[in-house]
Length: 491
View 1 (cartoon, rainbow, N blue to C red):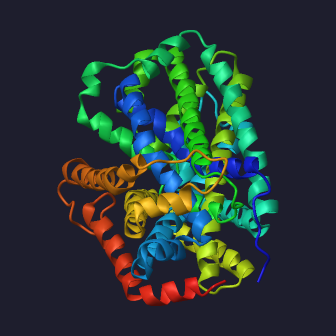
View 2 (cartoon, rainbow, N blue to C red; view 1 turned 180 degrees about the horizontal axis):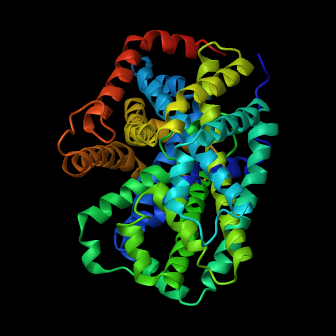
View 3 (cartoon, one colour; view 1 turned 60 degrees about the horizontal axis):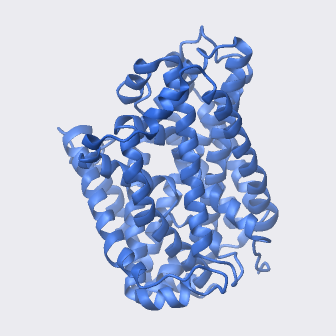
């Protein structure tokens, strides 16, 4: 068995945690959701839910990894009891399911970075057609394979030489790129109006329950809380490493990046297209993740003052930042899946190779079909809410007071959590998870697929979620005893 590795420094661990948290959602989802939910009005509940969803779950997850030194199956079995090991298997499946299509997103980012360098991001380009031609070709499949290969290679190199070292490169470069783009965006004539829109709340919007639900949804998806990814990284930290402080640093830094990206996008939108730009974000070509990133923003970049060099440079920096953010998150998904296989008895190196092969094969449908991609994103993104709920259930079964004292408040240099934390785990996290799941099903039934919401083979139906979740949970329940025994007997 290979010798146990540990992150060599607190900086390396925090940068790796940031690699998990900062991903495509900070870039292609945050600004779109802000535009659709009142601008500055959205920021207030978004910050509130950072404190009552993201941070409590991050703390719980990091503590569980440090406490158990196990991937989700073993971790939940140790904390919540062997009978709920299947919940850990579901947590692992959700993260793995996201990996299978998220690597496609990594490839999209790199492809458009290449497009920027070769002059395809220009005023004469039809970006609808460019995206259609690209997404319907074999290029997404090719770049999906490249992305998975890069991620597997980094994980294959190990915690220190692979994951920690790569994040020490990717994260600082990402921050530098974002700051360079932001410096140019905020100096555009009229950019201040976009920044004002981002930070000016309106009471009418704050009284709208949909704004609050969307703010909670964004927090559930963009910090990495409840994914199981932080848990796996925390298996490799030293006993004296803090839980609460590191989790808070990660959460605040993640949301700061989201805000900076918001400043960049809204500054550019208002400087170049003003009200027309907001309409495009709310209901036009920017109203979807792919529409915003690969159609609307490239169009916007070509309208920047300064000529072709500025257009291609700004676009190249943006898509390189997008690629770095997505890649760093994908690495953690490869690590989680391979560690689950390792704990089930597969040799370490072989588990990483198998992860790469399985991820490539199961990602092929999403690479070749945007409908399959959207379906998988719909099903497993919602699964993250169930994962967060399962973490809370495991801790409740263990005893929140006991968990707080034995797993969280263990470092002499950490902030010690009091009994107030019990309220988050026992009440607030479960209630928020259930409300968001019900809200998402309501949106499916009333808006996304009102006629055939029950159909198991529709892209955004409730039926497809129930089918895929149900089959997975059914299998895990049947295999629960075997999964737990194999995992817990793995040294």
